Length: 73
Image (cartoon, rainbow, N blue to C red; front, side):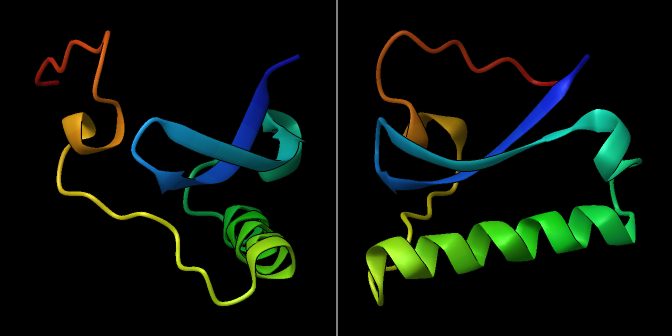
């Protein structure tokens, strides 16, 4: 079984996972199930943290500051 863990960054190096789904349940990326899963993630974040917005960066190094190698794909 493969799992998809959904969450948001509260600050650099702090990932808050709020929900997980099986790959089978979400289907292909971009599906309506994916959209519903992401909406669920947003709603749970709001329930937990109210108006506190999640951290947003421009690159992986903004999110993970140590022990991370950023290789172009």
